[in-house]
Amino acid sequence: MRIVLGRQTEDLTTDGFRSRAAAYRLTLLDIGTGDGAFPYRVAGAYPEVLCVGLDPNREAPAAYASRARRKPARGGRANVLYVAAAVEAPPDALDASADLVTMNFPWAGLLARVLAGDSALTAALTKLARESWALQILLNAAAPPPSLERERGLLTPANVRERLDPALGPVRVTELPETARVASRWGGRLIRGSRRPIIRVRADFGAVPPQYDTLLNAAIGL
Ligand SMILES: C[S@@+](CC[C@H](N)C(=O)[O-])C[C@H]1O[C@@H](n2cnc3c(N)ncnc32)[C@H](O)[C@@H]1O
Image (cartoon, rainbow, N blue to C red):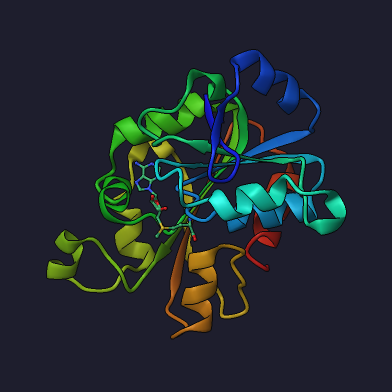
């Protein structure tokens, strides 16, 4: 698969990725990672977790990718990896790799698919995940997709819940409290800016240990 090193990219084989992942207790996969701040920061707080950012725009995470490759004393993080790919066409190497899947502030087509209950998206996420895994999606309540905007304006836990794919099973949909601090670029902007409400979607699949919830909470400052 194509991994982002900075301005350059490099191929990492499936075996290369698997042996790297085997050195860590858990793997977190951040879909639509953008500049990649979220996996970089989670990786700093959890050295035992391999944090993989996925984004089709390979230039977006370039700065964090090159920072992650520095010496540890200068911000280097061996447990961060950025993959240039869309969630619809991920490299096979990532199949069944993720214990935790995050998607922070998807926009445009990706947001529309989340809120159209797209079962192909659920299938794509499930393919990337292990048997037991936890999903967290954060949505900017003030930026609904055009279809919802025409109807009702703001996203709310209720209108998000009714639009999610039922195949996600029992989901918890809540509004984040004002004390939340999301460790992603867009999260920081939303919170620091107008304190727009953020909707959180959480789902667990299989026997998920409580530590997954603890980690996901910590990553959003809860
Ligand atoms: C609003 S940005 C959020 C970036 C980051 N998650 C954050 O919170 O700062 C949305 C990101 O989703 C990415 N994206 C769009 N379509 C995608 C897809 N099909 N698969 C994966 N990522 C996608 C975009 O390239 C963009 O970086």
